[in-house]
Image (cartoon, rainbow, N blue to C red):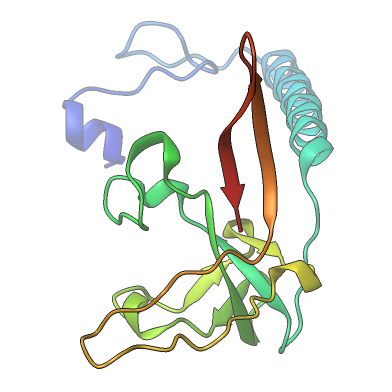
Length: 181
């Protein structure tokens, strides 16, 4: 018994035999030829639609490959509701990192070295959530050690003045705002 008959307790009416359910007439080779031609047309149109959709998808696709030792950013926007990386809402970062690629797993997956505060995440990611990190010397932070006194206080000294504004009053000029680094 065919599965359709077992599920619906009646015979399946295929295009070859669209007569009454009980009788089955063979109409000759021309019906079979018509059916084969229709199936060919359907396959050609499906192939054309798939090719068109593939060209749309390939237009924006980039083949990314990383090697062990490269640094990448990790996309975190899908996890916006689950993890909060410092800020909430619109100001939450889209990418975090950079993290080092440890190894390549398969063709599109990479194992990434994550810091201990992200130990809840699995360290294997698809290439679509990784972005290449280009090293820039301005990203390196040079910091001076802070001198802390006995009462746990310290003095702040500006490195340089970045911007200032001078307001002109009737008889004098007054320095208003300053931005320090």
